Amino acid sequence: MEIDLLITPEWIITVDSGNQVLRHHTIVVDNSRIVALMPTSEAEKHYTPRQTVALPQQAVLPGFVNAHTHVAMSLLKGLADDLPLMDWLQHHIWPAEAQWADAEFVYDGSQLAIAEMLRSGTTCFNDMYFFPEATAQAVMESGIRACIGMIMIDFPTRWGSGAAEYIQKGLALHEQLQANPLLTTAFAPHAPYTVSDDPLQQVRHLAGEHSLPIHMHVHETAFEVQQAIEQSGMRPLARLAQLGLLDQHFLAVHMTQLTDDEIALLAQTGTHVIHCPESNLKLASGFCPIAKLTAAGINVALGTDGNASNNDLDMFGEMRTAALLAKAVAQDASVIPAAQVLRMATINGAQALGLDAEIGSLEIGKSADMIAVDLGTLEASPLYDPVSHLVYCTSREQVTHAWVAGKALLENRQLTTLDSTAIIAKARHWQQKIGATP
Ligand SMILES: CSC[C@H]1O[C@@H](n2cnc3c(O)ncnc32)[C@H](O)[C@@H]1O
Ligand SMILES: [Zn+2]
Image 1 (tube, protein in one colour):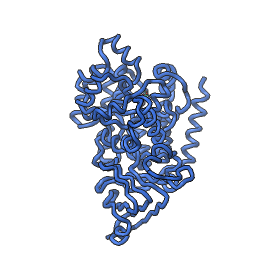
Image 2: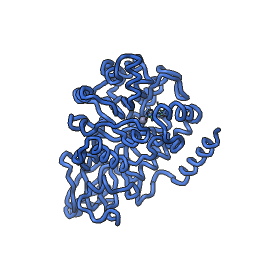
Image 3: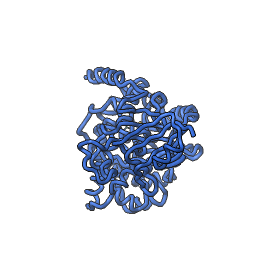
């Protein structure tokens, strides 16, 4: 039988429900999907591939799902470091965005980020930023998969004048992107301290009507919670619950401040938690208790946040930081083992975005969104357990290939749809413009 592609790596890390690791097996891809995972000897007998890829040193695994980011902020990477969240946002990032974040900035920043993500093994990201149509354009040209945020914030920005315009522009984009199988949309109200009740109710109503996720920064810092209590007598999560927002379509990002009752509420409502450990550490925001959340049955996925608070979009780094930090926070070395943190970076992110029937694991019928990682290096030797190495001992430079819907977007570390030289030149151009500002 003629098919598109046979990939034969040393290991196939399926991230299926049994966390199977297969050796001497081949991935059979046709028409953008995985049609079989079978012993190599059988695959060679049964199929006539249009392309064969032998990866004798590599592990092939599902591409990472970066479940929270602001990709265009890559152009602000390193602009304002070593500051706490509100100082960083109010005195550095928001003024820079007011001055620079137009459609061209967002398009160029998104391209830069997509190139970095593909070279780090990310094949899907969940974004929240101004000019989402410019990010969507960069996504479509690159071939990566993304969920594009329809933002909501109480103040006017360069992208919109207020709630009515944010909703109108967001829904227009949602309609426009419906035909594209690699693009989905979510509502993205910024945070409880920047979005008031009325627009949040509109978002809840529209998200229900269109069956879309809602993606929001929540309980990022103790200051956020304290300020809300002083102003309204309520903790932000309680307010969101009262507004009817918490359910299996709600992605609560950060969540560093949680009582046991709040953990029970998240579990009961099926709310997803997106953990951004490196951003939380860099802004000294706090610690999300992911071992407790996981034990309570809450779906925890991983995000990098934007490049201005991380300062990279490296899901290998995020996995390692998440695993190590969870052990320190729980004071228990046995929590969040490697296989679990790999699930957080793949299938759990897919689940949070409602895409788990399509991506997040290597299983028959799913889209062929995969990466290959070289584990034959000196640094990876000896190797007793490939999953352990992927989490505790691999750096992103070991990613050799990335496919989205069966299309190779990275081959032997070369981007196939993006021009790295042009992307670097544009980033330096922005650096000169932004860096020259007094
Ligand atoms: C409404 S567009 C997104 C908005 O969010 C800002 N942002 C980036 N990182 C964070 C964070 O960790 N907490 C809160 N807000 C953040 C970004 O600069 C945009 O203004
Ligand atoms: Zn964020």
